[in-house]
Length: 323
Image 1 (tube, rainbow, N blue to C red):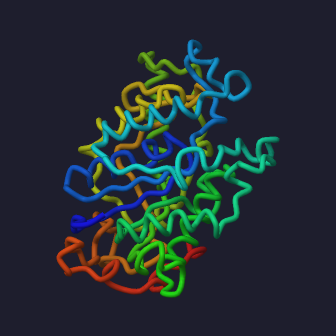
Image 2 (cartoon, one colour):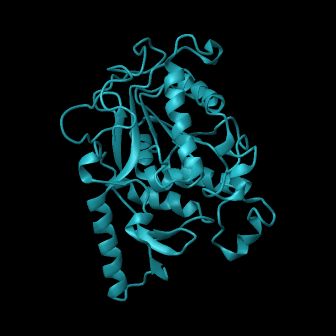
């Protein structure tokens, strides 16, 4: 890419739908503000459970056609968010969905969980050096809830950040580039508790909630003590776009108002505000940041105004494992 805009955000996710549930409002916000938002999805989500009965034949144990279908769902979701740059890691189908931790699918040689981390990271290095993001968003070391593909996406993303900055590494993939800030997805416990209280209240008053049950707080990925949250961009105005993107993933998600459910049919809150932990780079100031680009030098690439990811060096600020 040439003539890149001044702000550039890269998100690394495991399966189609993860991006909309975790970061849909954030992606819509920055895309609407003119930033380049790039999404890299690591698998096609072939092992997902299918919600609509009429599409049950797509499942891995039947036609095994879910991956192709979810590719279309992801494209539709990106239109809802205004995101035009989406790639699959290494190309569509390079890595297969690994299924839940401990499942037999974990042993398939082509699954993402079995991938060599450095090899997979090389594909992401090429993207980083091309789009030169100041900010990268991915999961924490547990992948939010222990799914093997989420854990692997974390490992690959963090390794790619390191390799992309190494001057001697694969110069054929582009000039070395240092990502200024890396964030992990998270949700403060108080926000989750409030969201579930609203859902339970709605169910108790007989409101039309189409879910037969309510999920538990522990079912929400990435819940952390409030004090661990370091950034909360102002995403509430973009919750409608987030909800629309989640609806686009119709094989995986059912959305109803301020709530949604996955294939277990247990309702949980749809969060309008999205939250992050800074784990690499310098914060833009004291207290919670309200902008993921806070403190980062910005400028359009192609006019000579940007040499790297901005202020600071990798290794300053909070480090991996500190949160």
